[in-house]
Amino acid sequence: MKTSHKVLALSAAVLLALGAGLFLARDALREKAASVALVGGPFRLASSRGGEVDSESLRGKPYAIFFGFTHCPEVCPTTLYEMSTLLAKLGDDAKDLRVFFVTVDPARDTLEAMRDYVSNFDPRIEALVPTEAQLARIAADFRVYYARVPTSDGGYTMDHTALVYLMDADGDFSGTISYGEALETQEAKLRKLISAR
Image 1 (spheres, rainbow, N blue to C red):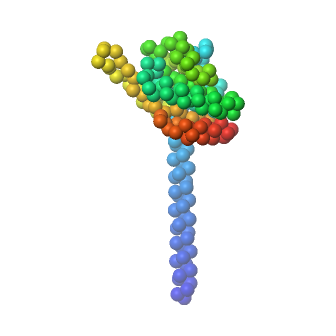
Image 2 (image 1 turned 90 degrees about the vertical axis):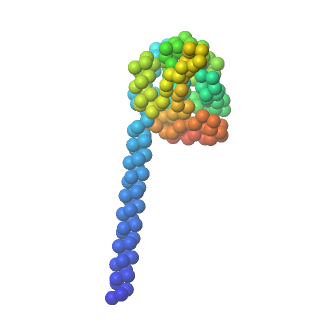
Image 3 (image 1 turned 45 degrees about the vertical axis):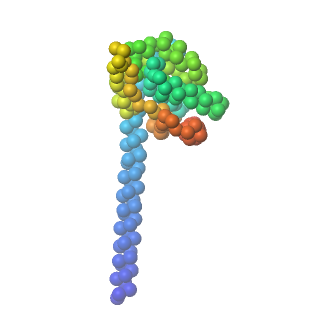
């Protein structure tokens, strides 16, 4: 009798543990799905190469997207230089990877200014210029912070999120590259992105 009680108690404990495990796994999957759904969204922006880039036309190929501005003293040029270095290192492996630099300062960053700016980096980096309304929408979709900050000389600079967003071939959020992250880590993330198709 005592043995059967022990077996029943043990069975109940195992079932409870399995149930808790399934519950936690379900929540983890929901959380992952929510994070994918919460970063990114459709966009159609003017390109420094002429015409527009429509996010729908990007389906089937991964892309990286970074938000900044041409008057940025350090974060933007460093990030674009590192992306250029990585693209060169990846070579043909990155032939289908699109890289976009979206200005958060469309008042100063015209298409011409952006074209001149990105000409200093890998030619695969394409500059996109939104209107103020388009910027507000794409920044909200990608969870990008940006703000105009007055300077002592009467001008202004821009605060902004310093992340490269990685989007997979389905247009879903895959991860980020942080400013100052080791180049080896950045390369590993890009290789994972381009091999996930």
